[in-house]
Length: 485
Image 1 (spheres, rainbow, N blue to C red):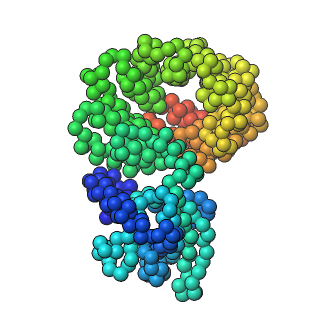
Image 2 (cartoon, rainbow, N blue to C red):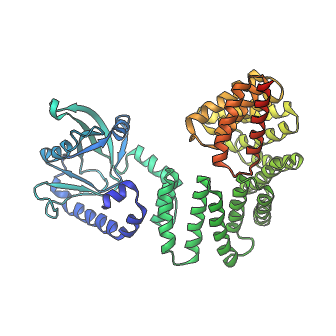
Image 3 (cartoon, rainbow, N blue to C red):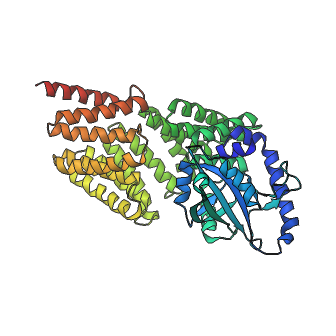
């Protein structure tokens, strides 16, 4: 049950059996230290037989030379024939691939602890070697062996050293991105990083139920708010963020940075809901705290100016938007390298304002500055590149250069179709824009197709009163009338 919970990231079971996880790991460590001299400093081989799903096997086949980690306690045997029995258990299952892992262990290097548990195992005669959680192996060769009736794949693995350079780089990167004062917090952050939102929600819900003080409750409410925001469940995100704010306003001074974070988070949700006046109110509370507590060129101030600029942009108050965006750019130009992604975002935002003010040459200039940075620093399918292509397409669209507009819109759509879920609002934006080009070139049939795709997504992803839904419905009706003429 425990290994199943670890493999499927079952938060409730992992939390409730946390004491057992700790004790089992410690016992393996103690046995490892007591037994290591028995290996006489000579490498040896253990085996593990199992059936892998075809998807997992395909992924494994692509990682030859790379690293493989098991997120559970790993049972192996020094007896090949005993392990093959488990391999053959998958014979006849069309969804499984029979695999025998052949694992080479060098006892001279520091690794994840492992221990012989033959004297403790329920299964006598298996000569079992048990590895603690998250053992990491280097993947060697993979070859098909056996006779026609019992074909299986033999996968060579090498237990990696703790100081393996590739493993160290990967571990350091993960540790820098997944921080927290407790193991549970780090696990929650890791699940969010992996996109395992349902598992993260399960974990944080259990932790919230067990929380004994307001600081912990505020943290878990905050994480659940972030999670719901990522899922597009804006109503629940607001509820969680307001619970955080309720605790903080009772316990923190009025200019505390955590209060600024909460105001900003609530503002961001209202922004996504299209409730711009509410968003502005919360963003201004954030800015007020930052202006009192931070130096004038602090990056958080730049971010706050940018958020307010975005609200004014969406409210159609372009001169105010430009003023705040220029404050952001001024800070970034003083504090960031010339090819920093945040500078690209700042150029992009100013370009947006100029486009909507009808100053297309200025808009194009800023958009191209943003694109230049992004093409130098980002992978070819990065969503920010899609944004740049989309925006440049928009300028050409407004200038009446429809073939150029369509070319850039299609570049944006190509990235978004490869990287986003099929109901993502940004896909709807691309469909809507391409529909607009086809409408302007009087290809009403194609225009209608793209507008309807946009509407289908926006109706599922946005509140019913969102302005995008109203606009695309109007475009559909105009198209239908044009087709009847």
